[in-house]
Amino acid sequence: MNVGKHSALIFVYILLCMQISYAQIVDFSQVFTNYVYLNPSFVGSTSCPNVYSSFRTRNLSEKSYNSAYVSFDVELNEKFGSVGASLLQDFQSDVFKETEFMAIYAKTFQIRRYLYMNASLAAGYVYGATDYSNLIYSDMLNVFSEGFLATGEDMERIVRHNFNTEMGILLYNDNFFAGVSIKNLQGNITEENKKCNFFPRIFSFHSLGRFSTTKAYTQQYRIWFYPHVNLVVSNVSSYAQLGLVLQKWMVQAGGGYRQNFSKNANSFTFFVGVVQKKFRFAYSCDVTRNTTRKFDTHEVSLGYQFDCREKKKKFEAVKAPTI
Image 1 (cartoon, rainbow, N blue to C red):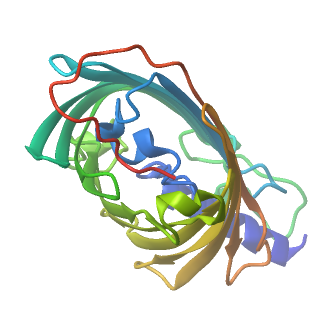
Image 2 (cartoon, rainbow, N blue to C red; image 1 turned 180 degrees about the vertical axis):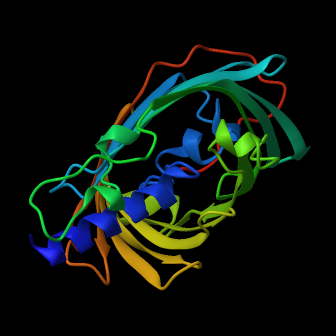
């Protein structure tokens, strides 16, 4: 029997168990195009009804990690605020599966003439399933025989039904925004609770600015700059993302850098997109260092903005800048 192969299988088993103990933290490379996932306070920020979809795959050659996301948001009016909904599906190999549906409400407050704050709360249902029969345990391996032996581990498939909550605050004007969001507000409060709720509390601090090279009367030569930063903190994985996107006419291009704090791991992201008045498309590729699969993470997104309904405004309309 190949001892090296057995050692590799044991390593994969340990790695999966470490990730499944808290479940996979779902994050997207295109964090600032997927603004509803970034912060629920973005719901209704475009004023018009908007639908967004994204698909991200990690370790494409092995089809190990796949995440799909769809969101819809619309501003009702200034009195009743904005509403939205999102659906997330996450697959971690053939072991962990998660489906999450969230309903979102956001309200806009005017701080100054051109400065606004959005506050939001999201709540929803999470279905999770873990199939341990697809794992390779150490007691199944024997260096003196071929194949796998029977295991003494519990191979039962575990299904969980959880209630999830999220909140966000966003401060913005026409040229910048800064916000904070907290995912999984209930978190893992006790050791006993960890057995049924695998989702840790996640804090995100993010900001984006929008600048251009020319004045309004020379718009044909204008280039937009979107520098952005995102800091994510949790008891499982903490990291910082820095990036810059440039836009000329309807074409966008840029990149970013991500540094994990818990271990010496970092990656670069390359981003290209096409933006029209109603339609947007983007593709990104993550280049991961310290691995043999450097170009194995990809993400595509599609967005569509519907026609706006004319509404009376008590204050001057200002939209939060988004990529």
